[in-house]
Image (cartoon, rainbow, N blue to C red; front, side):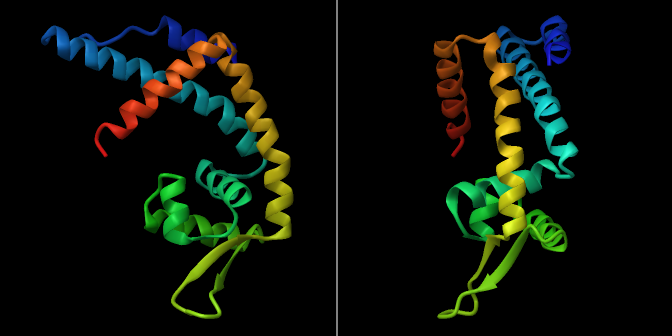
Length: 160
């Protein structure tokens, strides 16, 4: 984990010679992207060891914690397009980890459910992903993690 964060800490910001506001925004963005990429590397290793992509893991985790969802809701929860989610669910179905079910009252509604195998796998992998993220984020104190979360939420909802 630390080797990824050493790269982030030693990375330089923007070389753009624009206005102070442009340099500050670009520098912040670069640092944010590098931090996200570093975290993705450590969590992605756990997912790859389980034979899952980030999108597949996200879908399984959402179904575990939220219960069955329609495909559009699931795509929204894991921040993927509906088209991408179709492929993700197709692949999870092929592996026997999830299944689509038509609503008995309205056959237009299709919900995605975890299978027993999907439930078992995500319950095994999720704690390992959580552990590596907890370990990676220990470079920040608890209060700093809360501040970062609040800042990211504010940034993420600014354009909504």
